[in-house]
Image 1 (cartoon, rainbow, N blue to C red):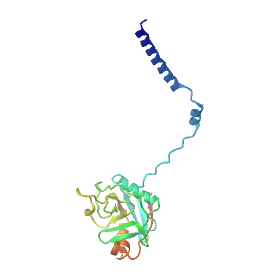
Image 2 (cartoon, rainbow, N blue to C red):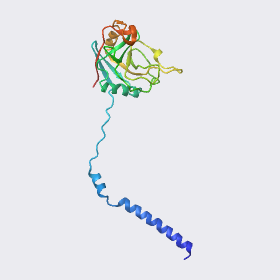
Image 3 (cartoon, rainbow, N blue to C red):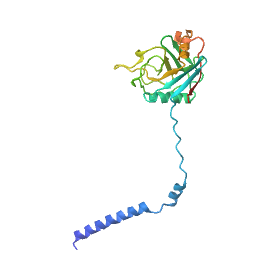
Image 4 (cartoon, one colour):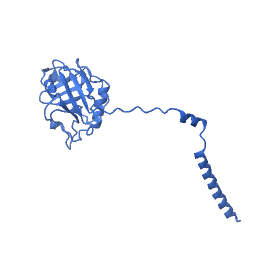
Amino acid sequence: MSRSTRLSCLAILAMLTTSLTLGGLANAAPKAADKAAEKAPVAAEKPVEPPPSRVRVDTNLGSFTIQLELTRAPLTVANFVQYMRDGHYSGLVFHRVVGNFIVQAGGYDKTMNQRSAVRTVANESGNGLSNKRATVGLARTDAPHSGNAQFYVNLTDNEELDPTPLRWGYAVFGKVVDGFDVVERIGKVPTGSGGPFGKDVPLDPVVIEAVVPVP
């Protein structure tokens, strides 16, 4: 047998040996540590609770219900619901009321102290939802992705808050489907100077007592 032939045979034998060895490892009996791992219970992941489709806002002037846009504004809804679950809204007020425009809440308490809300959300104003009467949107600063916990309800059609090809708009994420008369009542309360919103602050606080999911 020539030297080159012997080398070829050795190479083939080495390949077969490696293959058998790998196959043997795959089918080998598990080690003690592996057996212990097999017997150890696997901790189930904590299920992520889906957001509710509706929430109720209870105030000292009455309650209203918001239908949330789970499909078209998922990020904004998830953000709002998390603030709700954190108890952020309880005890805050409608700090800005502008007749025939909007009522706004989610940032200040009765003494006009701002409640911390550091989590922001990407602007979803391009979701095709318009700022029509009774819709609910996410308030923000001039920065397009600065919306956090503050929200507003449109008292009338406010399409000027919608996006255009040249600028971001204000994201609509829900609609008041029950109790809009309460929202209108809030929109008619007397306002005056106070805090950072001048003449748009209600003279008698309109307090959010709770925001809760509707079964």
